[in-house]
Image 1: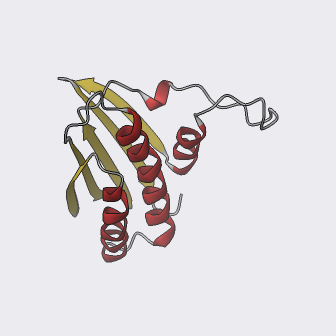
Image 2: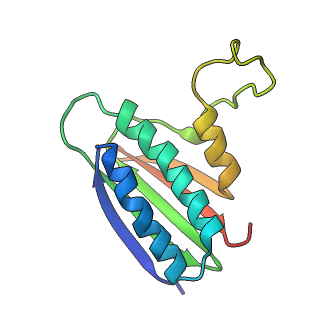
Length: 140
């Protein structure tokens, strides 16, 4: 049995990310998921959506990004769907956190943060769309 659902559509504009954060906070609060879970989801979405909006589109046109949240089994499932160029964050290399800051490769830290914040991440590419599923268990 599935629980409450929140469906959001944003456009490829960085200002949209801050617009949805309080909506997600309220949804998590209304469903007893707690501030820590809401923070983890918002931080992960900030990283992922910033990358998609900043680097994913080959044109300057307006694109829709679907963000769906659903409460189930004491946690939250987040699904992102976009038509940006294909990118599988689950296949991205782990950053070398032990390297000197001046010697580290650029990029990858945001995806590392998402991996650390979420309990499960799944990616697929279907009909020209990236589909990313994030799962965060309450209390995890």
